[in-house]
Image 1 (cartoon, rainbow, N blue to C red):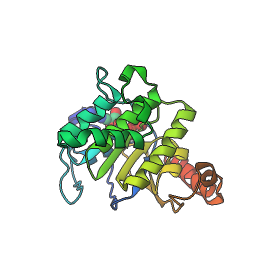
Image 2 (image 1 turned 60 degrees about the horizontal axis):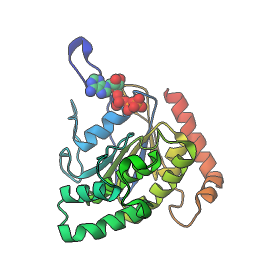
Image 3 (image 1 turned 120 degrees about the vertical axis):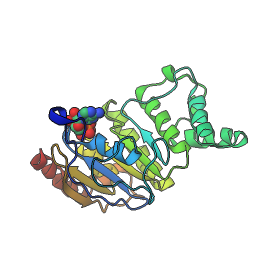
Image 4 (image 1 turned 135 degrees about the horizontal axis):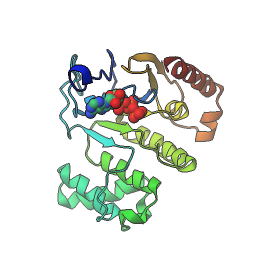
Amino acid sequence: MYGRGADAVTALGPVSLDVPQGSFLVIVGASGCGKSTLLRLIAGFERPTSGTVLTNGGRPTPGKGAGIVFQQPRLFPWKSVGGNVELALRYAGVPRDERARRVRELLERVGLRDVAHRRIWQLSGGQQQRVAIARALAADDPLLLLDEPFAALDALTRERLQEDLRLVSVQTGRTSVFVTHSVEEAVFLGSRVVVLTKRPGRVALDLDIPLPRTGLEPDELRALPEYAALRATVSQAVRAAA
Ligand SMILES: Nc1ncnc2c1ncn2[C@@H]1O[C@H](COP(=O)(O)OP(=O)(O)OP(=O)(O)O)[C@@H](O)[C@H]1O
């Protein structure tokens, strides 16, 4: 609950979710249903008014234990691409002599190897979001939290980043919680999709996405009949929840 008295807003209803290690959970729901609030609770930026949030068996500490990617990339504009990632590694306590190698690995992973020396303002929006993902992966945090990271990008860039993030999630095995409005994005990325009702958000649908996570090209995956069926199920739940 935010605020007090007449101004109080109950953002989230009772929500009980257990997110197993290595899973990719996508939270979908209408605007204002409490998706970002749920992420902030997991990140430890907010405390629940009632109930408990545990990550890795303990109460979450803000700034520790989770890499976070927001809708707008939060980068240091005066630093280079590599410099931004290097700084995240420094904060994460990675020794100086390992950082250059790790910067190269992380930039390779998000497809930015060739622009390591560019300044942030010389990048497209999609490239900036890739830097934000590399930064979020820099610390070896077990959790990756993403709050509508692709919402501001054009459709083609968004699709490319979805494809790359899916691959990164398979390669790193990071437990991820991803918030979006988009049913298409949810079914493509998630190993599980949770649809929230309108505010105060409760779980309207909790669906496993048993699609292969490796071995298929994105277009092949999207062309599967199971894919269309899952998308229809989620879409229906989103409409009913709104
Ligand atoms: N710091 C705050 N103080 C007061 N109310 C807040 C605060 N943050 C969010 N709220 C309210 O809580 C509700 C849920 O907000 P939240 O940002 O979690 O929703 P959301 O599902 O992420 O929305 P959107 O999809 O539009 O980003 C909204 O009604 C919002 O106005």
